[in-house]
Length: 416
Image (spheres, rainbow, N blue to C red):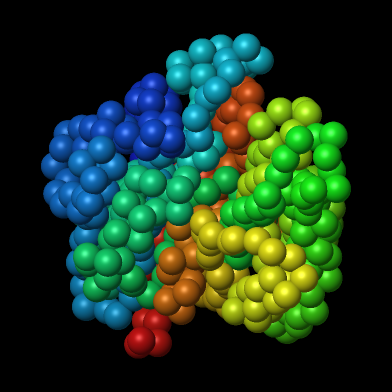
């Protein structure tokens, strides 16, 4: 059956390439987050193949789709997860082609979102299509195609967990976010986005003795906020062991220093505004910061350290995003299956790593469901000339199809 599945993918090469091209052409930038065109493309494919599904939508401009197929009796339930919203394109001047063209150049499909993550989502869709009618599987296979991942999913995957958790939780989750062929992701860092406001009376710029400057006070606060990157924590032993072993491949996939960044608290000032004009003492300053927290950091304890700075600095604070760091067993059954198939298809044995950014996979991990990410290399991700070579796309699809087949053919998982 495995050979038959691989042959089916090879025979469908042109159909798969066209599907991905048209997927890219169905613009779905977030913001604004309107994914109706992209979902119409997915639905058209499923309808043509007589595959039933249900829409689970909180905002009509951000639809989500769930399809599920039961096989022979078994307690495994594999969930396939992919998103259809993508980063926006603010400047097209550096692109070799129209970023929404899905054009093929030198054997690669170009366009915004092709790597993040329309190839990966296509892998989920085709995996479901190839496996849903097989008779030699056990358990259940579920497809989730969601919107709003780029803004952490309140209208997407988080909505699904609000309205139909029993349908989508499963015993394992397979996701096709861009990972590179060098790595499989078993966890990710947490994200803590905060907005600060510093206020003073202000005044005339020549009368600095009359008021403190809010911008200068903000800089002092920023120094202390950055110092919190030295916050002490202990990595879980399993995570530390996996990351020790994956250092070389991690850096090869994501750039020199990536493996170190995964294991330390990072701090970025994303925005800052303040002061009305040059000859006035700034009476206000607002800035937003982005902390990324490794596994082992207790978010509550870390937040307590930030709040303690109020004793030294006067400020107002708003929490914009708070996602906890998360991980699943690095050598879970699904991870081992994916790694074996990936090596057979690419010649590269991927290493276990954690993601520096956040994905919907975290929503499964925080529910103690192993969630594994394997997808194409992130070429041009969020930048110019985003692209995925066709051969890479086909290898990702093959890996997902074979891994889902192997997981649902393997010995039953332990009941949850």
